[in-house]
Image (cartoon, rainbow, N blue to C red; front, side, top):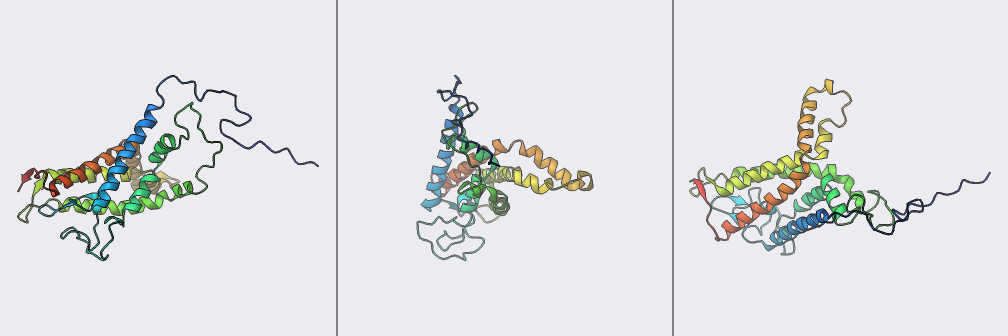
Amino acid sequence: MSAPPKKPESAGVGAPTRARIAERTLRTDRWWLAPLLTVLGLSVFVVYASVRSWVRTAYFVEDYHYLTPFYSPCLSDSCVPGSSDFGTPIGELPMIIPLGFLVLPFLLGFRLTCYYYRKAYYRSVWFSPPACAVAEPHGTYTGETRLPLIVQNAHRYFFYVALVVSLINTYDAIRAFHGADGGFGIGLGTLIMVCNVILLWAYTVSCHSCRHVMGGRLTHFSKHPIRYRLWTWVSTLNTRHMQLAWTTLATLIITDFYVMLVASGTISDLRLIN
């Protein structure tokens, strides 16, 4: 008995079974605008965050305890005095290593593996595909089954680290309620840091992994009313995950930039109390 004939291997839009259309797309609208804006937005954040993470200047305001999130927690002897509330278990670091090296790779992993960001850079950077009804240039598709994309499956683990980092950012925001005389105080920097950490929490808990933790494995919601309630809250917030993903990129830059301006003496912090 002869073996059945082999099916032709998939080759994307160039597969033998696909219609032969020479044009990349028949769309006449500006379909390329969304991918372009995504690339520009992500590039601005990556360049800014990279520069600020390596410069090691103007990241802490001692008078008001403002610490930029790009350097938190600061655990090295290289950190400026007062910026290391969790101690300095790590010695001096060479300039090539950012002072926030302990958490930055995990936060980068959390963002890179985020379901929304996958969609964003798959379309805008890898053109897989760049838009609906627009052919992608790749001849084959392996999904997230091989390196490097198989790392995307570790998103749930990056989520747990992101929770810890959010707690640290919350501590930094509480610590920012500090006056120049050592007592209680509120400044514009305090409000910026609080707004940033609230939005970071909203982005983190609106994550699909958090939604799965809340109720993804439940068979009967009626038997777990508390987890069901939490699941519904997270599900509602999850519908805003894309907006929160972009908003938090902006608030991270705004928070860091404001701390930099105050720490460098370029501007004075607008004090509301003390």
